[in-house]
Length: 93
Image (cartoon, rainbow, N blue to C red; front, side, top):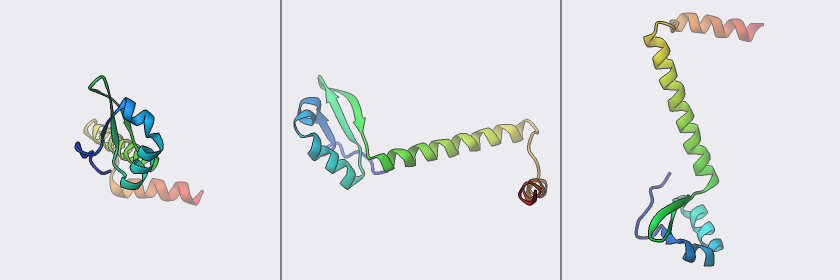
């Protein structure tokens, strides 16, 4: 995901309301999120759906890695050869 460019990607709620289509096109084209402010404070982020899905996928992968690391530290892991055997047995059934 592209990072927000503070000089280009921060818009007030009133400006966003008046130019919704323009800002949607901008988000899709640049793949950068748009920060929407209300009363001078950050209020919401608008982002492209594919960029959102990519971020969610990465977060899920990181959670899986953390869970696996925790399980290994607790002695619940299996060796690579054991894992290969388990997977091949499941595939061949």
